[in-house]
Structures are given as C-alpha cells and as structure tokens.
Length: 366
Image (cartoon, rainbow, N blue to C red; front, side):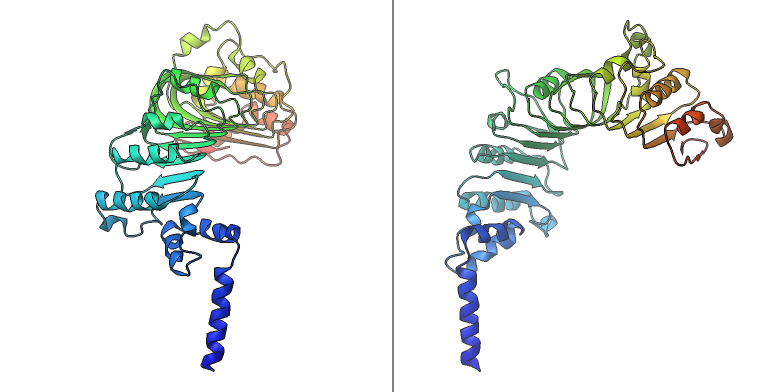
C-alpha cells in the first residue's frame, strides 16, 4: 500500500513539475504574491517561476497582517520581491490601506519605469498627498493609469502618454492646463474618469477616441472639443458657477456641447452643468437629432427654474429613441405639483413605460 502511495505521489509531483511554463505563469497570475512566492518550494522547476510574474499587486490581500507591521518592514518586504523579480512588469498595483504617503514610493515607480510598465495603479489612502516623481513621466508605454491622492505636476518637456487608453484620477491635485494637455496628448484615450475636489476654472477635453467620460470636479465649466466618439457621459460640476458670465454667451452652450456628441448613448448631468448648458439660449430642438441617446439621468434638478426645464425639454424633443429617464428632483413642491408640470406630458413622448414620483421636503426620484 505504501509503495502504491509513493508511486501516486511521484506521478502527481511529475505532473506539477512538468507543466508548461505558460500554464505555470497563468496559475501564478491568479494568486496573491505571497502565495505565488510559496510555490517555489513545490520543486526545483517551480523555484524561480514566480520571479517572472507579469503583474505585481501589493494590496491588503498581499499583507493580511498589515497593521502588525511597521512601514519600514512593509517596504522591506516589497523591495525584496522586486529584488528577486526578473523580466518585464506590464502591471503594477500598490494599494495598501495602512500605508501612508512616503518618499519610498519614488523608488517603486523608478523600478517599474524600467520594466516596461503598461498599467500602473497607485492608491495612497493615508497621510499627505503624494507628489509623483519625474520617473513616472518616462513610462511612455503606459496604457492604463490610475492615481489616488497624488500631486500631478508634469515637467515642461513631457509630451504625454501616446499609448494611454484609460486614465483615472481621484483626488489628484492638477492644474487645468496640465490636465487638458495630458488629455489632448493622449490620442488613443478611450476612458476618462475624474473625481477631484480641487477647483479649476475651465477644463478642456480634446480626445478624438474617447468613448467613456465620468467627470465630478469643482470647475467653472467643462469644454468638450473633438469628442465625436463619446458614447457615455456623466458630468457633475459640484460647484456653483458665475451664471451671469455664461448668460452673456453669444452661441448656445447646449448646441455647442451636443455638436461634439453625435453618437451619445448615455447621458448623466447635474444641476450646475444643466445651468451651464442653458447659457446662450435654449432652442426648442437641437440642430442634430440624438438618435443614439437611450438613457438620460438628471441629478438635483429644480422644476422651479425655467431655463433648466427648457434644457430638459430640448433634450427629450431631440432624442426620439429614449428608453429611460431618471430624475433626482430637488424641490419643495408636492408630488402633485411636479406631475402637473408640462414636462410630464413629454415623458409619454419619450416612450417611458412608467413614471414614479417620489417627493420629500429635500429630494426625490421622478
């Protein structure tokens, strides 16, 4: 019996040891780093397989007892992993909830900048904002860049990330000029997410291949330019604007905006951006019909503001194929007052199957 068990064990060991390199790499890519490193004890043929991992992810799974370790001990562990790693690192993630912003991150970014990095995710959850080092701007093969709680200040000679497909910035301090230049110098950019609390005057988005835009920032205005591929747009300005300045506009902001959104399918706007679009006059219908628009979401809309209602009606009249409208209403009116509003008649024209009106003293869903 023991002899049979030994043969079975030897046979199983041979199967594991002789797996193709591509299969072993696929297996390790599905494991947390610490588990991938432990596979080095399986056999001599597995000993150095983990050192060729194409992606390194340092998150809370990587260090489950993170709160029992000091920053120095944690950084030492990360450095050791990098020291033994060989070959390119297309993907690198550092997102540790217990780790504060520190200068040691500079070395991590410098290391991956020399390893053909294509996807970089950096999430600083504690401490001061992290000032990105100059080595980041030498990562010219980047396709995906996600940054949390950083200071983004590119050097004058920086020409952009020409291969960038996806950009996500959360609580990142950056000037409007630098951000606009970063976007326009990324001609392949398809997805853009901005959620920042820093105030900027006007953000220009010039991105011919952009398909998805999520923008929640403190800004005076957002100018969409050369965005003819945009299919999904969600904009929230999170700050009041100088409405009088916009009202002096000679051309309709509404017409200008949708002139750059010919294939829009999903649209979500907040109250402030709706006010911005009402500047320069609101036509009954847009010059170009929004045939692709299926979903229209409006947040914190006040039915007591005529201009905002006119924008809303213009959008509906110009969108013959709407499937769903959702409105978050900010009103002191009763539900009956809202239902009696002329906008309710337009709902039927927009092919809505049902309308639900819920109203409270502060907000409700319509």
